[in-house]
Every structure is written in C-alpha cells, then in structure tokens.
Image 1: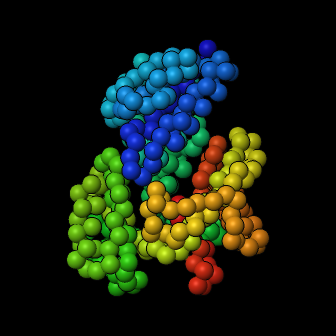
Image 2: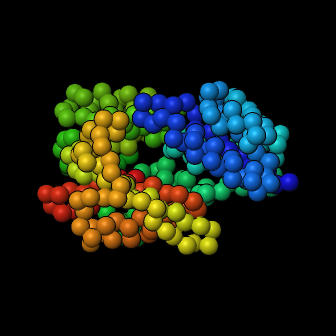
Length: 293
C-alpha cells in the first residue's frame, strides 16, 4: 500500500484560521479513497485533520522541527511528502530536512513543488529574478545583512518600506516603516528572527488594489483557472477586516486576461503541481501591475 506524509499547517494565527487544516482534511480523504496509507505530523493537537480517525492512519503530534520530521520519515518511509499546507515556513523546514540527506537514502519524494522551486521561493532576490525572466512585474526587493546596506533602499525608493526576516525562526510578520526610526527598529527585529541574520527589504504596496488568481496545474502541465478574487479594500487593510469578492467586479477584461496569463506563467516556471494562489497588486493611478507573491 502506498503511503503519504502530510506536514501539518501548525497552529492557527490571526493571519489565517483553519482553512489550511480543512484543506488537509479534504486531501487526506482523497488519498484514503484511493487506498493510500496516511501519516500526519503536526504541532497543533487541536487540528481537525488529526481528529479524522477514519482518514488518518498514523498521527504524530510533535514540534515541527527538522529532527522530528526526519525521524517520522525514517520511521514510516512514506512514498511521498506533501509540504504545501504550511506556507513559507514549512518550505523552509523541508529545505532543511532535505539538507540532512534523508531523501537520498530513502525512496521518499516531495510532491506539489520541487526542492529547487522551494529554494527559489525562499530567496526574494532569486524569486524576483526568476519572475523577471518570464516578464512578470515584481516589486523591488533587496536582502541585507547589516543596516547600512538596508538603508540603501531608503535612499533609492524612500518610504514606506517593508522588512521581513529571511528564513525566519518560526512564524514572523512583515513590518512596515514610514520613517528612519521605525525602519531601523524593524530591521533589527527581523534580523534577530532570521536564521541567516538576513533581512529582505521591499517596497510597500500599501494603497494598491489586491487581486488573487487561483490556478491549478496537473502533473502533465495542464492549467485551469479556479477563481479570481478581488479585494474591495486596498492593500494595508488587514485581511480579517476587509471584503473580498469572486468573481472580480471592477477589473477590465484585458486586466483579467493579463493576470490569468501571468498566473499561468508563474505556476509553470515554478513547476507547481496542484493549486497555486498568485497575488497581484494593481496601481490604478499608473495602470501598472505588480506580483505580490
């Protein structure tokens, strides 16, 4: 019987609720219907996916650390590992798991996204360069390991600027700065949270229109658009306090087609298999589009 290890989404936070956990439940049910043995590792004992006894054969409630994930892989030796339900920090975790060599000693492989693509997603300048190769518009981003280098972004682009730790230790929240004092404080905080002591500095897109294009790609490369979600409130309003509608209501047809084509190109370039949420920022004042992530 083939087996699958699902790395859980972790604890719920103010930025997202249990949507990833519900996705895990549906995914596990699909695997069970097809005769797969299912294994879940999660650090959230209250996760609904762990309570689905008829869908989960083996439950491992442990801290989501490299050691624990490697131990579970070695114990159960699953055929595949699904890393796409825990956002960026799970990608970072699986990258470190790969560095241990466990995937070289066992017939276990990642599905949904390749390790090469994971490394690209976790490296802001590399991701920006990759997106530029396919003609996707991107926001300006720079990685700095000391404050003087980070301040170059202030001189070049001015405020507001967003600071985010590279390879954060656990979950982290991007911080926005509007002056020198807050920028320095945000940089120091992000650097302390970064495993590499590096901080990604990027232009703020506050005030622009956010549009999310949800697409799905199968293993053969076929792509379909699932939905286009338009945020009624501008970027800068917390997601829990803003309205979003689907289908999009105020975009022109040419704008919708442009976003759809870009979402397809990004998904192909990153070789994602499964659902991909591509977020864009539209600057209505200058009729420009920027890839969010």
